[in-house]
Image (cartoon, rainbow, N blue to C red; front, top):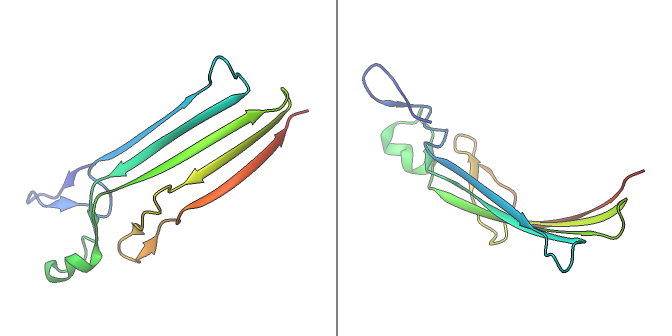
Length: 116
């Protein structure tokens, strides 16, 4: 995303100029109950555009990538267990450069799902 004002200056600096999300999953033919997957989200630097240039360093988030993993096992057609590991490398990053809000640290959660 790149928006500019009438003078050619960048607007919306708090939004990344570039954002890439790549996710995939794989189910081995020999073990069709198991699915494994993962992905990465990468974004370019962001900054608070309302801040004076002398303070911009304090209100800037450099580009970063977050890696996530997933594994799912189907015990039956109705019962599955999914385990997600988010932010595998425990990357510290800000989601809001103006408010200094940080993204979630490494975390893991499991979901047991029954369809009836």
